[in-house]
Amino acid sequence: MMKLTKFGLALLATGLLASSAAFAQAKYIWIDNQGVKQFSDTPPPGDIPEKNIVKQPRRAAQLPRADTAQSSDAAPADSTNPAPTTAEKEADYKKRKAEQAEKDKKTADDTKQKQAKAENCARARQNLDTLNSGVRMKATDKDGQPAYMTDDQRAQETARAQQTINDNCN
Image 1 (cartoon, rainbow, N blue to C red):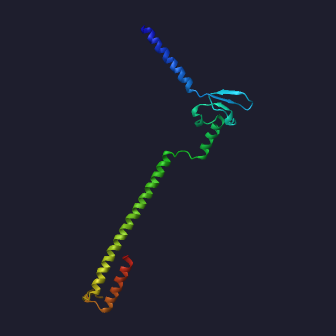
Image 2 (cartoon, one colour):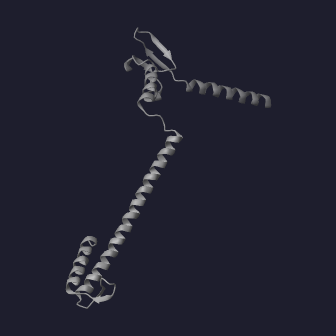
Image 3 (cartoon, one colour):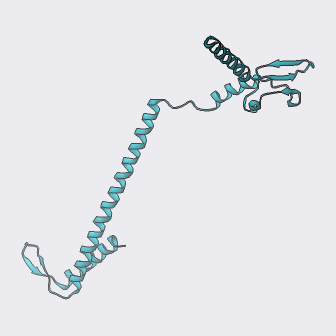
């Protein structure tokens, strides 16, 4: 009895394999241009109208026809760019990295420049406030000795401080 069971299992397995192979093959039936019925496991040629295709698998709409498959395979290779090589990817990465570094440097330079302008603005405003306060101020003369500022010197320093404010304060 044990031998019969093993034989039955082997027979069943063989039958399943054979039937799955039969189901896996696509069966096409169409009538060609001469009116002859054709049977094939490949799609019919592209010149056969859809109305002459008698039978095709359910997923046949996804499969290309026999003669159009060759022409469509050649077209994408010519019309599209091939995938970039590792060297091209590396060069592109380095280029992007250099551009980002340049952008970061420019941003840092702009930030430093804005900070310097803000500091210059604050000093110029403080200097202008001091000049306009009326307090006597000392400056060095031609000989390097401290001396009180004259009204003309005060006016010149006030104009210079005002110009600095105009240039650095927004």
